[in-house]
Length: 119
Image 1 (cartoon, rainbow, N blue to C red):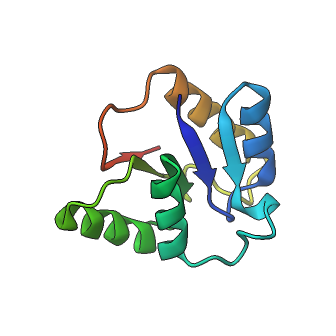
Image 2 (cartoon, rainbow, N blue to C red):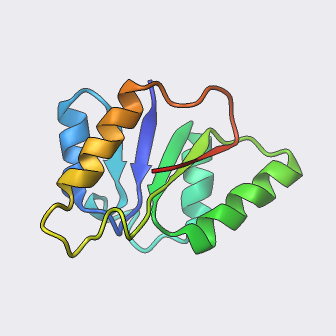
């Protein structure tokens, strides 16, 4: 089973709906102790709990993942979301993101560690 740590730019309803489906999902936005946590610390947390970060913050998380891979440090994976595909100002959001994550989870996420997946 995949453990998801959903970055705070995404609506808390995504994590709640995934939990209702039986998925282990936490939204940074719903956890006061995690809100405002640095990207580096969130990456550390996900790695230490065998979680996968779901974020649209490509600019910060993609280099973090690349650095960890280059250093031989282990983390499960990173799911990057496109702000064009999942426009947070659109009526379809967050339902479109939830549908994409459900589909991704059903299709069996990548095996191994240190991967990056684009939704």
